[in-house]
Structure formats: structure tokens, C-alpha cells
Image (cartoon, rainbow over all chains, first blue to last red; front, top):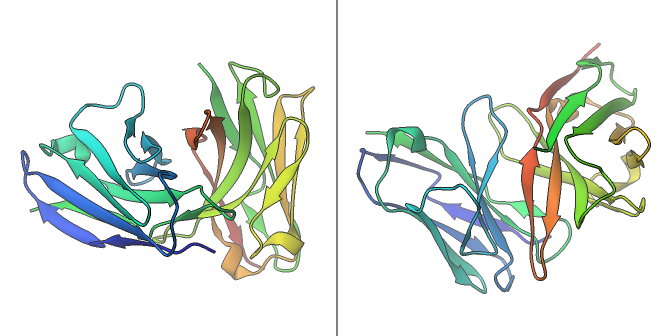
Length: 107
Length: 122
């Protein structure tokens, strides 16, 4: 299985901060990476697909980049509704695997 | 718009079979370039992909669960289902169904059900 390592596992930030999360794959996954947001008690929501493509309806403050083994997810200006847990997911190989998650908390 | 809804028992005894159904509304399970997945999440933990099915009936499963998992589709009812046999407490989790959208070079789970908690306990 491809291991997805997210860092940090948690972070504290303030509204309007720039937030960056990284995701490292245990082998080359090309651009085959998605990013999801999950709020407590809710299902994950797709934000970014294929490493850098913004899902329809998702605010442009969210972005993703990277290819191969190293990927970055950025929130350019953190908003109150963005406090949540974020997961990366690879789909280059089966089984699909997720990173461990990054919890973004209010400072 | 397309919506997914999980249903099934919230409590399953150890060694028995967990059975869940996902009902798709607002669109046909047979149309478009989609597959249909099950994902689970133990309390306070991360996400684990269980497997997926295409409207043709072909499946992919997570090898960690492979021998215990069966995913089926009923296109006449616009539903797909999960069976997980020989459950233990480790299978206690929120189970989500999701639609996988396939593009030319990508796939992503773009629509999710709300999730259903299944507890394995005697």
C-alpha cells in the first residue's frame, strides 16, 4: 500500500492566517492526489482533485500543488469556517489511501 | 442534485455480518462515469477506503478487508450495498458511502452520504 504522511498532524492558526499542509507519498503518485475537508460529525468534502484542481464551488483561497511524492495544500487567508480536519488521498494505486489528517484549530 | 443516504443496523454482534445499503437519489446509479465507494472512520481516527463498485458490477476491494468484504449494486433500486463478515470491535466505525467521479486522468469522491455509525458489540 502507498503510505501518505501528512504534516503537521495539527496546527493552531488565526483568522486571515496563511495555512500550509504537506502530504508525502511513499512512492511516486504523479498528480493523483485529492484533498478533503472534514468538520466534526460531518462527511468529508472534496476541495482539490488531481493535486491542484479546485472542485466546483470551493472558494479560491484553497489551493493545492505538487506532483510525484510531495504535495502542498494551502489556505491563503483562513476563515472562521475553515477550522476543520484536512485529509489528502492518493488514487494512483489500489487500495486508495488517506493521510492521517491535519486538524486546523483556532489559536 | 445527487444525494446519497446510508441505511442499516447500528449495532452488530461480534462474528456476525455487517450489512449497509446506500440509496442514490437525484440521479441514476448507472449513468455517467462513476463508481460507488464505501469508506469508514473509527471514532477519532482517520479514513479507510473499503472498496468500490461500478454500475457494471465489477469491484475493487481493500486487501486488508478483501476476504470479508462484498459490495453489490442493484441498479433497479438505485442502491449499492456493503457486507462485511466476521466483524469484531475493530470494525466499529462511521461508514460512509460516496460517489467517485472519473475524469480523463483523475478520480475523486465528490459526493458523500452523511455517514452511519455501526457499533460491534454483544
